Image (cartoon, rainbow, N blue to C red; front, top):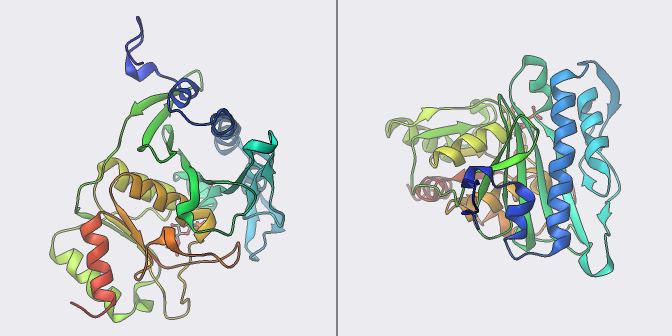
Length: 305
Ligand code: FDP
């Protein structure tokens, strides 16, 4: 399919690639719609006003104007952490999807001109309160010096990069993680870490891992995934038993991608993708990245090391 005359594999566009994946036309359509929305989001990020909108989301967080704007752009048909209702895509009764998305994760970083992203999890049917393993696909879009879209529908992980015509073209296929790595991204205040977490950090430092933390979940995960090595953690803190990151809108989509790439994601006890969510706003501690590093984290947490 990539050998058509005049086309190198780097010129394969997202729609064409998706059509070759043997997935439903509705899912192709949905992913392409989200990709389309991201073009308006990056335009807003690049040119937008940085003022505060003065509204707050379900969790009492103040939204920046860009969050609101990005949410409006993505909202059509989709459920979001910025909104109370669950929206579903109902393109036809046989092909109904529910979508959980974070339109502009790490939006406070826009103020200091660091990378941000959109995170998306896609479920068949109208129920979002299912373990992440039930997702039919997930993706993120990273708004950095370049815009990239990384997705999986359970058939490997692919990266597309936006070209000068604002089209997404294939840049990496079947992305795979190494068994262990030498990068670590630790979220949260270290003085609030448990002893197990503290030991895990000391273990990573002793084995020569470098600290790489931007404070944006999408760029931090993207670095680990594209380099194929490293571990990101946002553990339970002494004053936040479930850490900070949200299961539906942040952790599940990333766990789906990382598992597809041969990595692992756990809350320290069970895989992130096996957690049964009780509410849309549920949070969980997370250790995600190279398999051996994530396993090691669980060992330290459970006092086995
Ligand atoms: P932000 O608060 O800037 O929106 O969940 C949001 C998030 O950023 C993630 O993108 C990021 O990984 C994490 O929070 C950073 O939290 P800390 O500042 O506590 O490390």
